[in-house]
Amino acid sequence: MKPIFKWLLIALALAALAFGALQVIDKRKARQQATSEAAAKTESVVELVAADLVQVRPRLLSQVLPVSGSLKATNSAFIKARVAGELQNLSLREGDTVKAGQVVARVDATDTQARLRQAQQQAEAAKAQVDIARRTYDNNAALVKQGFISQSALDTSSASLASAQASFKAASAGVEVVAKQLDDTVLRAPIDGVIAQRLAQNGERVAVDGRVLEVVDIRRLELEASLAASDSPLVRLGQVAELQIEGTDAPVRAQVVRINPTVMAGSRSVLVYLELTPSPGLRQGLFAQGTLTVASTEALALPISAVRTDKPRPYVQLVRDNKVVHQPVELGARGQFEGQWMVAVPGLDPQTPVISGSVGQLREGTTVKLAAGGV
Image 1: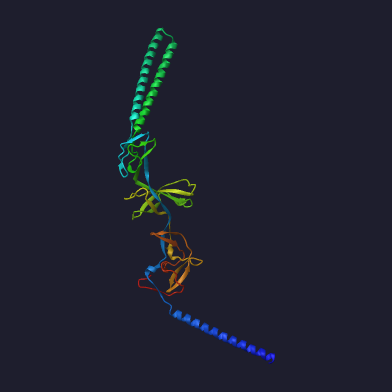
Image 2 (image 1 turned 90 degrees about the vertical axis):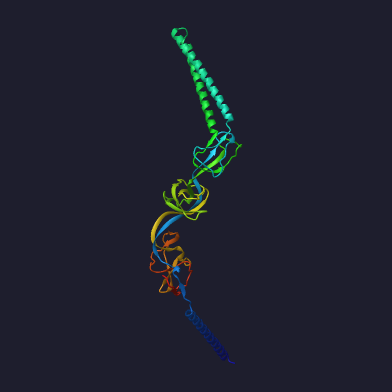
């Protein structure tokens, strides 16, 4: 066979193969198109109810800061022993109420009473020396006038009188010191309140400044909240917080009454003190958490859960002409409205319903049917 016929046959074979491949590709495209058209015809319609849609409306957004911490009494005190000795007559226990000035316990005063008697007797002896020195001075003064003794003798008597008087004053001061120690053996409540801790027992020997009882006034409680230094400039006296306290159902209001002027070195935080509105059942040590309202702004807003972020730009799912439309949005201020987190979305048409975040993502162009009662 001549070479030219050989190459011609090869060319015809390749052409036949190419034609067959084109036929296969055309048939495959036709099947895919038919499948797509069938899927489009059988595409399901998403039915939404009123609860699945939200409206963009003007709302007053409250800018808040989270606060938390344990409650503590504004007024509290430890009752301490001012003198060392054996503790007596302590009958109060945790939960008992006391009044300011009420005697709560005593320290054995036997030694102190003996030292007080000793100091008093020393003062009496010093007083007697003053009387003797005064009589001597008066006699010498008369003798000097009559010329029987010299002026130097009178000066000596005067010095003796002054010395006796100084000794008497020192002895009297010693009596006052011991009397104060005797008074310190009686322990009194410094404030009105309730016993929170009993730290000693009868018969126990307590040292000076040894703690015996803790008294707290739970009529006034406050929350010590720690805020970031960057947030502290937003806080002002009088701002109000809503707190949820463990063991209670209803929220409790609190007001900023003090702001610490310094930043804590370790945590770089600022302490803010909020006084709670009196409420039954509150106790020192309960944990509280809530939000502090620091500013408010009015804007077109919707729930932050309705904004989707699975694309490069945030967007919302609108219902327009019964179709789902993905509309990019610019996000503004965030805040709370009636306990729900909202975000400002300037530029959205308030008349266009927005699909809520609970529905999930819908493909753009999906047909939507609004059930009876829908927006």
